[in-house]
Every structure is written in structure tokens, then in C-alpha cells.
Length: 402
Image 1: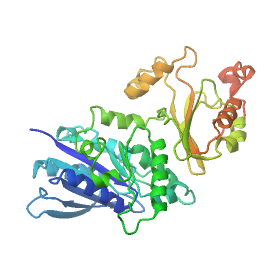
Image 2: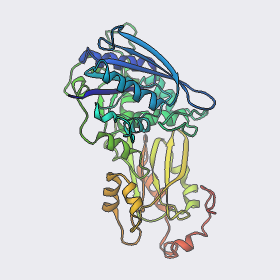
Image 3: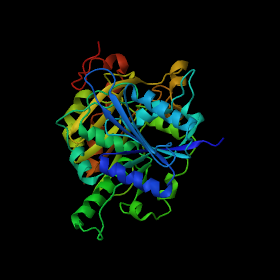
């Protein structure tokens, strides 16, 4: 029996998600739509409400359900129930802003012992994310409040709206930035410029995503447009989603400058001096909208320290261990992509250790940025001290190791 296709739509406003769903339904009119809303609680699981609609949804055409529980478990059960009952050829799952989309989907697709796997019944379609330009620009600079998202296992640590906005873009396989056109009575040329600017920034934040021109989804034309969204994603897509969550995964930067937006990759194969790095941050972060990567700090020689900024907020966090020869469990637990990268960068003495960060921003001074970071690396005399000697280097960025 052929599998059904499962499309997932996310977006930063209900209106833009609705436009994306309409776009899919024009190509797949017999699809069933499973729309989700989540109402958080101070403790325990949230209230998960689902609205099922479509010509193949069942005899009543639409169903509203609500329950308190684990969103992953609730939605997996809904999807399996749809498959056992109406068996629609295509299901469109729309997810709200309260979810951290990429880890949530990895958990949703993860096989469970003793339970029917989603992959036995569905093929994943490319993950589609639509952005309302005005909301995105307001969020990407907002760091003065915090939100917690559901990531498929639990609530995340508090995140800024800027971090949430960046994560949503980075999760996408396909990005749509809708913009009004001259035929729209509300059209204003500034709206078109804003949509174009957001599209340029989103393209740099996620260079591997297919970026649909901001009016292409309305016309339904273009070789990279709607038809690609209603076919199964390439084999290995779910594993690729998982690999993006690895702390040492750094996407290749987009080349070129678009509307003053550019991306800069910095990489180095010796540890950083924490105090000198702290002093360099003002020069490093000038003009940066988003940066992601990992550090090899001399004060944490065995640890992967993630670097993540969105808007003016920078977070450094010790999140993983570098792979070591002989640690078979760690190598087996790592994604195939990380094992490949570790082998590619392997050094006989330092292993996979390295610094690697991609910066995206407006009018970046790439020479100044790279020079500031290079100056924060250990010099030859400091490097010769080895890990035992590095332990005495002051670390104002992270608490001293216990």
C-alpha cells in the first residue's frame, strides 16, 4: 500500500501559515489539513487543540479535538488514526509558534519500541516555513523578553524572540516570504522592499533552503515553486534534520552580498583565550544579526562550547564533548554527518577540535571581524603549555571549571 505524504507548515503568524496552506491546497486539493494550537501551562503538559479539515477527513468533513498531553504523542496518534481511517493521500500538518520546529519534528518521526512508526505510513515532504516580513523584523531584534517552546521532549530553556525567529528560518527546507504586489489595493512599495530585505536575510540564515520569490507562491509558477512541495523529500531528510541539531554542525555560508546582507565564516584550529575573546566581542559583533557555531576554549579543552547570537544577545554554552579515539559509544551516538566531518578535520593530536562560526549581518567588516577573533587565539607560547597549563588562564565568559 502506498504511503501518504506528510507536509509540515510553520510560520511566524497564523495569517502567513494560512497563506502557505492555501498554497499547498491549490496543488493538492484532496489533502487533509491538521491544524494545531497549543496553550501552555505553568507545569505539566500543555492543552493541544487540533482542527481536522478536508474532503477526505471523514464523513463530517471537519473535526475539532482537544486534550492535555504530550504534543508529540497526541499528534502522532492523530496522524496514525487518519491513516488507518480515511487514508488520505496527503496530510498537511500546521504547527504553531509555540513549538521549536526542528527538534519537534525529529522527535515526531523517531521510531518507538512497540509502537507503529510514522515512517511506515507517511513520507515526509519538505518542511515549509512562511515569514511575515513585519513580524520577523520586529522579532529578530527583540531580546528583552523570554519565551519557552516545546521541543518534542520538554520545554526549552527561555529563548529570546530573536532566537525563536532565527531558529524557525534555519529549520526550513523551503522558505516563503509573501509580499503584496501592485494589484493589491493595500500595496505600498516599501512593503515590497521590506519583503525583499527579509528574503535576503532569510536566504543567508538558511542558505540550503529553497527560497521562493516572495510573489511566486501567489502565482503558482516557477520550477522551484509549488510542485516541489507536494512530492516526498529526498531520502535521508529526517537524518539530515537530526544532524542540523548537532552542536558541531555549521552550515556553509551563503556567498555574495544581497541588499547589504552578507555572511562570514571564521574557522581556526587552535584554542581561544577566553579573556581576550571577551575583550574582542565589541569588534566581533558589530553589525551581526545572527551567528552560530562552536568554540574550542582553552578553559574547556574537552568540551564543545556552542556560540549562538540573535539580535544583540550572545549565548555561550558547554553542550557536548569532542569525539575521542577509542570512545566507541560517542562515535556511534554521533550522526553520520558529524562522523564524516570529524574524519575530515581530524588532527593527530587535537582530534576534531576547532573553532567554527558563521556570522550574518548588515555591512559586515569581515577583515576586522576575523582579525579580532584571530587575535584572541592562544599564541605559540601559550599553546605549548598544553591543557594542564591552559587551566590557569582566566575565563570571564564561563564559570571556572570545578
